[in-house]
Image (spheres, rainbow, N blue to C red):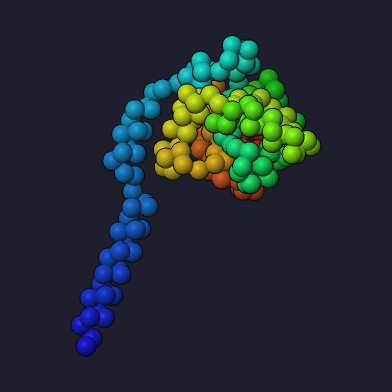
Length: 179
């Protein structure tokens, strides 16, 4: 009678071990993605994907790129905190950009419902090449979550990938920009 419980117990332990191991080890796909991104100057790539009118603003500056959407509650909650960081950051050293896969018309309709909503930094809507590139920099999470913040140095290195809206991520962004 005790044998089935022992087998079930061993099975549960095996499942827990596999789940833990899969969380702590980078998958083959993640290793391949990292290898493909090795040596890429992400600053240059992102700048090249921006409209000409914004490209000059990125030169010699670190970037904070925020992927978000109008339907994302956590995204909306963190925008005032990000606006505060933008206000305190040195604009000659940092370029802040919000990107969304939504079309501009969706944002315009959103603003009709929330006219007090404000971004104090650049926004780009519906540029799928840019959105896809940014989301692909999230190696561990596979670009499946928003908000996501990609912190990029002027030399093109991804300093950090921050997933989710949290006080901890806001603190990390503040530390990155020195405020």
